[in-house]
Image (cartoon, rainbow, N blue to C red; front, side, top):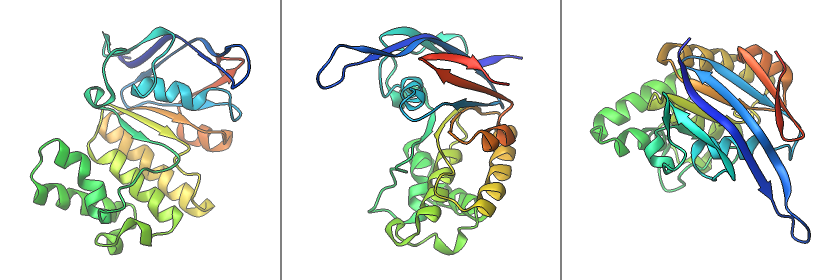
Length: 222
């Protein structure tokens, strides 16, 4: 199996408002192959999202390296890494309609706007959102916004996909439907996927491997 995304010996400290620095991550290492989903579990505050942000380049580790296809990308800015990110706040653009939110990444890659919108509409159909293509994102429910964010994360077919609680705003039936669609999309386009969640049953339904963060260290759970 060719390893694609690797985090090696990642350490990170945080400083409380009044106190000494504390270790949040201590020598955390993992690797995710093309087409594989790796789940990262742990309670709130355990460092899951911080590790994801370090992989994305949004935070710098105190020590350790991030590599892609054997190339050290630790010093690369987020836009150069070419990863797709989805965090809990969705970060949708309120001034753009739904299809243009989804098409944004393709347009940034200089795909012609008409072609980017066509691909966005096709992907929205797979997520059951065709009727909302011309709607403003603030007109959608939380669950609908979450599906838009998922579509936007997938459309550029990135080599690595970084997800923080991607289904948290969805009802149970829609969670099951979308995670199956998601698994198929990841496998089809061979994306290395790091999936942060607190829901172990969902993690086991989606991920081939699962790790738990315990006292700043990664322990393989399955």
